[in-house]
Image (cartoon, rainbow, N blue to C red):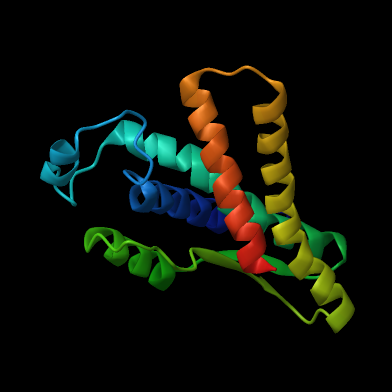
Length: 169
């Protein structure tokens, strides 16, 4: 069994960039006047905001899916990660129309012939990864003095992983 293929790496990179675009601007790194926010084109791309959005969303989604994949591989089943291009297109569309909510599936893992018990274990690991990321961000925020940008990053990491954990359970 292949640990990870070049095609999966390419899919992860494409998904990561798309997630960065879709979620850029939802949590601006700096306080911006309301007029400036609405004056910005929905098609414009702020690379700093995109990088910030990637730092928040990509670990939550990519590690969730890799949790499924590596658990399936550890249990002896064939597992392949795929980017959902249709799902990403929905996310981009919702961003472009400035939808107040974003719901889409950016990727998934295809697992061959896992029985119910093993399939349940494989399915549970993804949300458990999000729970672990949520707990880590929560503990760091409660026990460590961090700078404002890092506090924002950790708070948003905590939020998205909490949402993904609940949504996937």
